Length: 624
Image 1 (cartoon, rainbow, N blue to C red):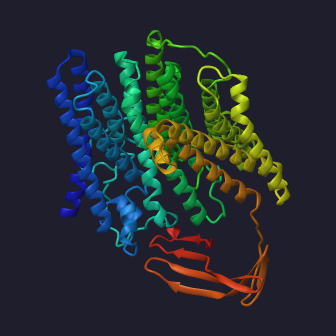
Image 2 (image 1 turned 90 degrees about the vertical axis):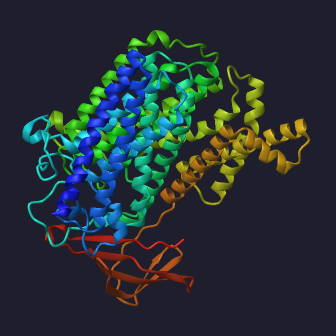
């Protein structure tokens, strides 16, 4: 009975969180209209309560997952008695309902941090910021507490009194079963990987974090405070969110390489694309705000980019949760899709209405002086990034659009994305090297020749060297040449900065280097990110053009040749682990007859009380 009470307590905490979040929205808007600071303080207190209640709900669900409270449907679906407890914890975000709770909880915590940071700042903006964040929190809480299945009863809401009566809700993580199973199905074996402790968390931190800049942008539109204040206030939030989203992509690629058994880290899967798109628009925003801060330009464009990043983050959640687009990452068919589409549509229309209403307050302070300027190169950078995001979006949703119009299913595979986005990304890489070498406002011919002569010369020599070393594919030469060009421009910029500083302050090389970076952290931090991007480009080019693949059936003692390496099959090992059976092939790796190591790729079988839930997985063997 106590266990059922815990489920009721978890559901009640979510229901109360919804009430307090709605109160926070209403109180914040009322305080803004009436200039009532005490009412706004009450709205802030409501947000603190929401954060506490959602923390309680998360704690209860984690406790239920770890202690195997199988009377809760989510626990029965995501855990089993044989499952290691760490994977039981990660089951919090491993399923649909838990991930909704995780999102709402993160956003509530982030909102509290925003309130603390702006306790005595941005007093005119903050009521609208709280209202915007409160609406988003309330949406996710409503999915878990009052939103019914639209396929069964339309877009209706229900008010069940406890978790037992809340069975018809689309996202309730505390739904109680009519009986208590002896064991659960267990977490999807593909998710039982150490990377699942990092990849989803970083991805959610990025998604949720972009809600903060969007809320401030909406507040700026509401209040007509459309200077750079909202941009400066949210710069750190934007950078941190962009960092986490980027880390989520990288860790996701590592997980795909290890778990999906296709020997690749990126397959242009719809959910992969959904993670990439907000990263592209956020990158465009990070570059374009520099033009607004320096020249007072692109004000409307920056607001649109913030909106696109937020909308695409929600769209990624929709694609993952709805099941309308097939994906190896998706949670399967769900009734959440229509609710997400409605929220996306309402948010987009409301933003566009506000934007057009405030057009008179968004006049540009300067105009583009020349097509050959840093402003122009940044604008071209933005167009390329947004173009890549749009191409990716169209390729992702086209199967769904085509089926809705023609009734026929079509598939848009990796070749389409590679053909369209490949040249786009190469142009972007070249632009990374060009932008730092072009001055603001207007660049002269003499400056262009002086700045570009050395990088082009180094790049030409490098391309000739690559060709002589056996790189004959034009795509490979362009990729490696672009990488050399960018690295050369960054090195030259760094060198010129050190030389200029030494002349001014008579410092040694080491002190000049450290102080140069310390006093220009934003600029050189960007260069470090660019270097990281180039390293990724080099890795992608190498793995794309120079990978080797072969298939063979081997008996113990037989060998197969793979370029310079010989793989010898030594036999099969079969043994049980805590929650699955392992079938490992032992392979000895030989290089010219010399033994260099052993590989043990696996086929693992995860049994389940429900035979339909039993699953085979592949574990690759990696040696570097």
